[in-house]
Image 1: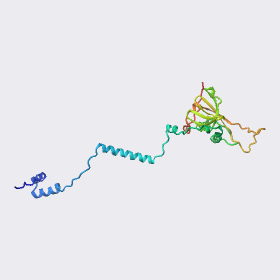
Image 2: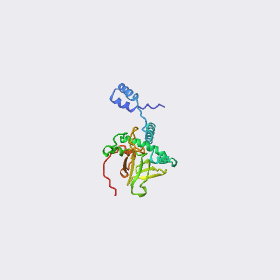
Image 3: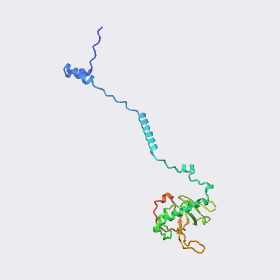
Image 4: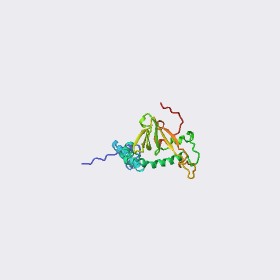
Amino acid sequence: MASPAPKTHIAHTLLSRAHSPDSATQQFTERIKQKPLFLRATSPSASDNRSRRRLHRLRKKEYFIRHQKPQPLSAREKRKSGLYDLPKEECKYAIFNGLHELWVGYMQEVLDLKAGGDAHVSPTSHGSKLASADYHGAEVEVVRSRCAGRVGTKGIVVRDTKFTFMIVTERDEMKSIPKEHTVFRFTVPLPKAEDTEERNESGADQLRPLVFELHGSQFENRPVDRANKKFKWRNIDYV
C-alpha cells in the first residue's frame, strides 16, 4: 500500500503561486521555517499582582521602620507607663525647694537682673519673656479665685499643664489649682551683691523683691507652646 504524499505547508503553496519553485523554497525556508519565535511569560493573574503589591508594601514598611527615629509616646501610652505620676513619698516641700532656688536664678537671667544694677521691668521690654518663661519651680500664691477656699494657697509648682498648676505646699500636700478665673502671685528676689553695704540694723538687705501677678485665664497653654508665644497687652476685667 502506497504511503500518502506529504502534506504541503500552506505558506509554501502561496509562495509557489507568486515565485519560481527555487525562490519559493528559499523564502519559505528563511522566512518561515528558520524565523525565530519570541515567547513572553504568561500575564500574571490578579492574585499574583495583589501578592506582589503586598510584598512591596511590607518591604517599604520594614525599610522606614529601620531608618526612622523612635515615635513619641501617645497620651494613652504615657498614662499607662506612669510617666506623669508623682510618688507621694517624694512630694516633699524640702525636696522641691532646691528646684525653686534654681528657678529664681533662671528668672534673674530671663529678666536681665544684675547685682547692684537697674531692676526696672516693664511689659514692653519683659512681657514676652515672662509670657514664654517656664514656671516649674516657681513659688506661687493664689490671690484671687472664684473658689474662696483656694485663696491663700501657696506652694512650689511641680507640674505646669495646660489648665492647671500642681503645687506642693509647706505641709507636703499636693494640690491641683485650675488656672481659669485664678490670679497667681509670685516674687523674684533681686540678686545680692557680695560687697553690698545697704543693710539695716538687723543685717537684712534693703532690696525689695519683684512681685508679679499671673492671670491664669490668659495662661492656659502648655510650657512647650509658650516658647514662641508673642506677648499682647490687653485689659482684663473680672466680674
